Length: 408
Ligand SMILES: Cc1cc2nc3c(=O)[nH]c(=O)nc-3n(C[C@H](O)[C@H](O)[C@H](O)COP(=O)(O)OP(=O)(O)OC[C@H]3O[C@@H](n4cnc5c(N)ncnc54)[C@H](O)[C@@H]3O)c2cc1C
Image 1 (cartoon, rainbow, N blue to C red):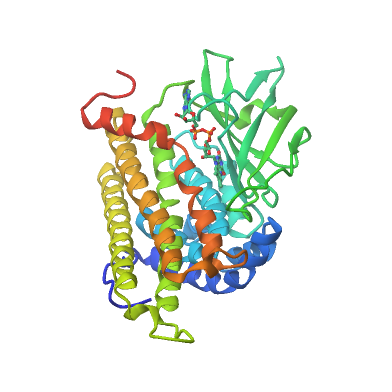
Image 2 (cartoon, rainbow, N blue to C red):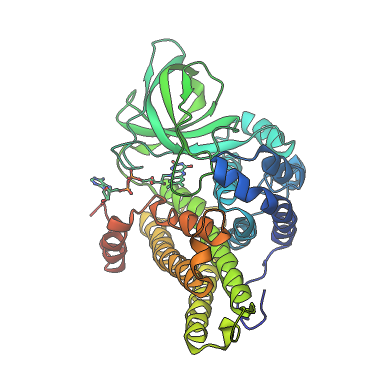
């Protein structure tokens, strides 16, 4: 990395330093596999074995259960950036697992904690459990899941429905799912479901513009019988509550690290391309047009780094000040609003950085197999990540800014 950009953040916690160093080592192993995985549209199982060996997948597991004891959102995003520089598909996939395990660690701290959570976390630390996040469904938003668990009359429920974009599901052992239950009022609920449960039907249909090696296939649920005790209610269906809002905001901020990593990789590719000696004339870096583009790249990358570091530090400070207590709904919307602002700036700027890096590099960047071509396709996925579709985010940010909560 060039030293003319002084704003790259460093980890702020000791577990974060260990995590980012492990992510860096993993990235060196993952990078050589990225182009092939992208071309084939398949996940690289070796890359996930590396992530488990190096402790990346057990980052949030407490030290006493065999993990790294990570807690900082800031450091989490930095580790994701390291992996995304090598392969953004792997970065978003492992991010889903880390978000789910972070959620389990939070639930373990509650008085009503299910004792089996500890076993799941131990098995994450042993590299035996990999959890993907199944929230999205066709034709509805995350707040209104239509995949439903219906009580059978005994001590089980039956789940029917469908989820899309279930990243990493081809190699995951479990699904962390959001569902609807109407046993006792209309509720949203969560369940950690082993993926080999009868009736869970992966569709092997992931074939997309970018993030091709993320395994984001859809899954159908056809009369899936689960123990009723495995279902935990979240709150009223269709209405955010503080804990749910916080989990969704905190589980997704780190995905912005993938946009940072992509932008850094594109920046480095552009700087290298600008220094190459052409067969005639001077290297592109000597030309005013390329210097202008380099300025735009530097401004863009600096913006991403500062916005991401500033937002994640603020969020870490907020969590520390809460000392484990649940925030108010207004506070939780404040955190979601900060995430939505950062998401909007970081993702739009990362798309712009990759675009301009291609202009510096020229037509070769457009060829299949060019790293910039993959970065260009991958970075376009970022704005879609829920919550907050690009078409919805400004309405939300504006309302919260004016003190008008979505529930008002
Ligand atoms: C590469 C990739 C990986 C992903 N991985 C995961 C994953 O692991 N797990 C997961 O759960 N999801 C995942 N997602 C899904 C992602 O988080 C979004 O949920 C998904 O892309 C949203 O797509 P959508 O078209 O359904 O809706 P949106 O992009 O949210 O919206 C599409 C349109 O619908 C409109 N709209 C939004 N809300 C409403 C509403 N309530 N009523 C009417 N119109 C509305 C919007 O204005 C917009 O015009 C992934 C997505 C991608 C691209």
